[in-house]
Length: 307
Image (cartoon, rainbow, N blue to C red):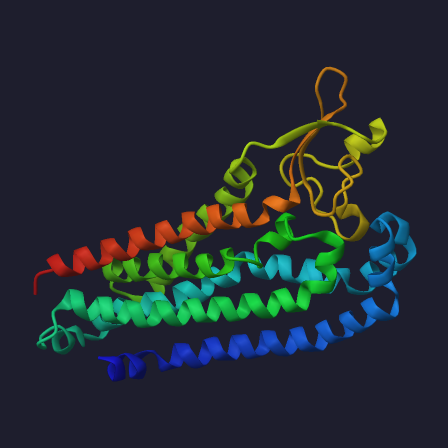
């Protein structure tokens, strides 16, 4: 079965390796120049001596040179690429057998259908985990200098570091496998899987993520204008460079949710930057649970399927 699975899915393997190679090349080219600039501009030594606001000139120059490529370019790509990878790999896994009639041979062998699917899922899922971990490692290395200025908790950064990129890929894969079994056509199954994946992805990011843990509420330590200059509904301090440091808290990467609350407008609620891994674990757990539910349903339906 391992040899047959390799023959059936080697196209997807080569495609994923091509994506990883392209990402690595981009990261090495831009990441190397970014690291060189970070050292030549004296940012490392300046940040070690003082608060980033005290390095305004160097931070602004660095942000102007690399902010768009590092933050803006990746924020849009990261929204959909993990889901696309998952559905492109997952939809043909069962749908191709049904679409071309090869199920008559595959499911009439000595290996039961449920075991046939379980082995294929184990192999492909393992490969996707390796791919997701490799992509995350490359992006984390590439973003390291910028992360020292912005932190990793902001919405446009959180989505492609840590555990969640791999969980996004697996969820898209699980939805596509189930859709392929139900629809029996690869391309319609990709569309049917990607739409709910994207909807859940946006719901989690914009509605659930800010409330994974109760936010911290403190009195604003800055002027009233600073209290109201950051925030605005869950994704307030999503800027880059110095704008990623809320004056109200003074900590890099704090996620301000609701500034200027309270009777005198001097209270803010925010998620501290040190909750990054807690939020990563919660969100990744949500998508892994959805993956398990989709794949478990697919195995159960295939087991009950009659000839």
